[in-house]
Structures are given as structure tokens and as C-alpha cells.
Length: 359
Image 1: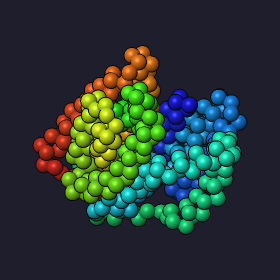
Image 2: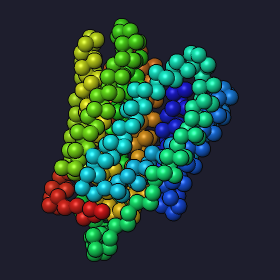
Image 3: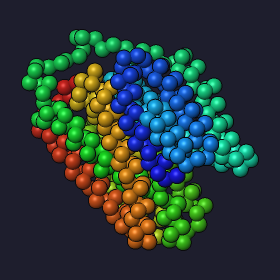
Image 4: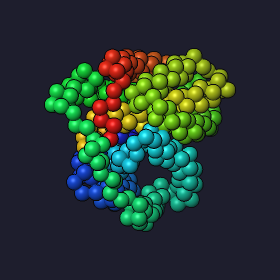
């Protein structure tokens, strides 16, 4: 099941690149409806119970063609409706993940207890097919075009330079930074309950800590969106990464229950604004017409970090028998992220903090 989850992350990231291209040439309405049908089909395939059906259903259908057609293209779509409040808008849209993380597990657990996991999967597939396509038809209209007078392409030399670097070099640094950021991000979310059990705290309390983490992330994401609108995407990524590094380190030094509840809340407050801030940073630095592939590319590499982080933490625990090496590795990756993003922030300051592509 851990492998299926990791492959779903990778499939979602890779699918975002493909479906971002499709959305650019068709419409966001088409990709959302197509993704909904693919997720429903993936759940139906997985409900057979065969391990290969589960892996294929989650990687190809739920991840690559399903979530990949929803999450990355929707972030690009929403970013095109806003200019001055883009960070807040992306934060509000992304907060739906945390609402789902708090609400659906309770309902799914009850449904699985009463009807079994297979029937729950099929039932949820039906709910998606009934609910999402009408919403897409009603609300997902084509975003406004950016007026030519408002959009500055710049000279040929300017188009070849982003923060003093070639555009693809700057994008590669953002991708590596996203990977390093998401490796530690995956550890508490995927292993907090097991970590609590490992140090003698009941699994039910660990699950409660995970809920506190999600709730804190939901509450703080609006703040991070507000901050992004005021200081820019790159600086917000750096601030969130520093907070995340401090919280990850605190997990290694805290063993009592009350302390872990506090650290879980602090971690949720710290990491929640990072991914939306990456989207804003890309929109700040690159032309709007390139968002359909640059945003999904960064998300793909970042989701690879989520997949790797969750898997590698489990592998380290299996090897050493305790979680300290996993959290230590998370801190190291997080510090690498701080160095990379910090270098880009310094380059932004040296260039006068200009945003060459506001649209």
C-alpha cells in the first residue's frame, strides 16, 4: 500500500505535465472531467483486490490520468484569474486538501466498517462521477486573456535570463529545491502515527496529532497566502522552509505526548504555505504562457520528493529500528532546500527584486 501511495504521487506529478499541455490546448473543463472519470475507473479497477490491479489503477488511472488532470492544471488555472491576490487565491484553493484530510478519513472508516473497503471505493467513484462534472460545467470557464499592453515579453536578452540565470537553469534549481523540501514534508505526514507507537504513545493519540497537524495547516495556509502577496513567492518559500526545518528537528528532541501535539501543530503551521508559494514564484519569474508546463514540472519533481521521503523514512526505520535517522535525513534535505532557495532570494535582491512577468 505504501508503494501504491508513492506511485500515485509520482503519477500525479507526471500527469500534471501531460495534462497541463492538454488543458492549454483544450480547456480546464475537459481535463477536470476526464480526470474525474479516470479516478473513478482507477478506483473500480483497484476494488478487485489484486495487488497489480491496485498498483496499475493508482499509478496510471488515479495518479497519471486522474489527479494529474486535476491538481496541477487547476493551480495554473486559478493563478490566471488573479494578479494582486494570487497567493491568497491559491492558498484558499489548496486548503481543500486539508478539509478533505480532516473529513473524509472519518467517513471512509465508517463506510469500510459497515460495507467493506471495496464497496467504499466503488461508492466514492460513483459520488465523484455524479458531483464533479456538473460543477466543472457550471464554474470552470476559460480564464481571461492578459492584455498585450499589460504583458511585457522583454528583449531577447531578458527572455534568456531569470535572476541572472538561464530560465531552465533557474527552473532546475527550483525543482531540486522542491524535491529537497518535500522529502522532509512527507515524513511526519506518513509516519507520525508509527513514530508515536515506536516511542510508547498510543496510535489513537498519534492519529489525533495528525488531525491537529492538518487542522493547523488549514488554518495557517490563508496566512501564508497573505504573506506571499506581500513579499513574493520565493521569500515565502524560504520562510516556510525555515519553519519546516525547525519543526522537523523538534520531532527528534520531543518524546512526551503534550510536546508532540505542540510540535505537530507547529509543523502544520510551518509547511502549509510552501507549495502554493512555489506556484506564485514560478508565475512571478516566468511568462504566463509557460505556466502550463513549468508549474507541473516543479510539482512533478516535488511530488517525487514526497514519494521518496515517505519510502526512504520507512526504509531507514526498517534498517535501524527507530525513527531518529529518518528525521535527521529530513533535516539535512530541508537545509539543502534552504540553501538553494536562499541563493535565489539573494539573486532576486541583487537584481533589484524585479518581477519581469507580473501577468
